[in-house]
Length: 203
Image (cartoon, rainbow, N blue to C red; front, side, top):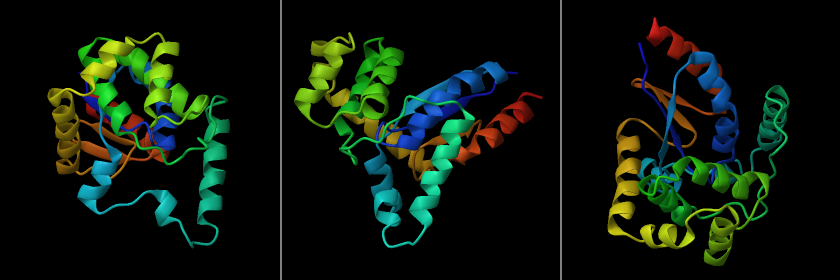
């Protein structure tokens, strides 16, 4: 039995990027496809009264250092080498998340996701600068003119809002978030639990 699985993501989350790198192996092991659902993390935070770890970790001794250690362990565990902290973080992702919706409409979604993640967390750029976004699209072989036009359409803007509101309604408060059926999982440290839940629901 096929299991519906969703990955709710925003390009601004480094942990979502790390999940993105591991998802192909998860799909191979389980034989299941994981649907990528673009959401706006800023909208999620506003609706749930949540804040970025950049803010929540301020003034807490040792916690940010421990999270850095956990990231180092994750990179080693999954043999991840293409990851670099974005020097422009935090990046306002509104335009590139609208771009994800536009890319779905233009049938270049998978390539778009790969390339924007590259420009955010492998070869980091300031992906909230319109000129940088345009240059990144062109370098990546994306349909630049069509994407930039579609990103401003009312339907694309409304769809991103709809995705974000629907995610909050289902219990999402941050990214990366996964749904296995109706079961919610948050964070890159929940991948083993996600895989176990997939196998449970398949049986």
